[in-house]
Image (tube, rainbow, N blue to C red; front, side, top):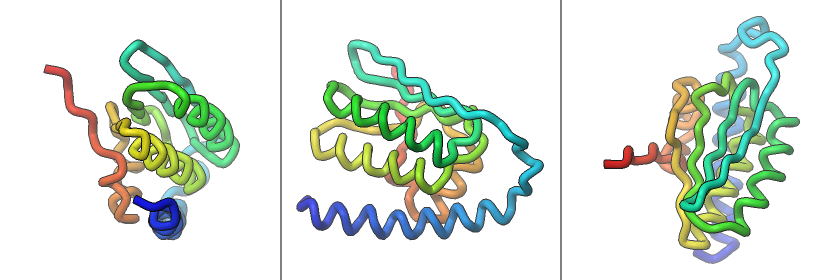
Amino acid sequence: MPAADCADKIYGARRRVSAAVGGLSAVLEPQDHPQESSAVTVTRSGSGASVVLAGQIDLDAAARLRAETEKLLAESGPVVLDWQAAGHASGGAVQVLLALGAALKARGRALAVSRDQAEIRSMLERAGLSSYFPIAEEPT
């Protein structure tokens, strides 16, 4: 896929994420997640990497996530997301993950979710983005 087409898809996805996150933010009252901290942890193995997101993945956490994901692009193997412990993912965090998925795909690598989180999945579905974050198949 040409870079311009990829950029157009990401820009369109960004608008859908912003709309969905705005709708989700209206549903969640601030006291639902009072001053919860966030964590972005990357674990590497010989077969790829696991990115664990926990707490409120806000704009500050999205910046940390971007720094970590840029390092992952220089490595090999699939990247698996675990966001089960995340209470919320900002539009900025979803944009970082969309860009990671596109960059991995362009390199013949995969991005998948190992442990899903219902609120995040629902927001992705409303934005039409859930297909960009497939659930990882369990090893047999």
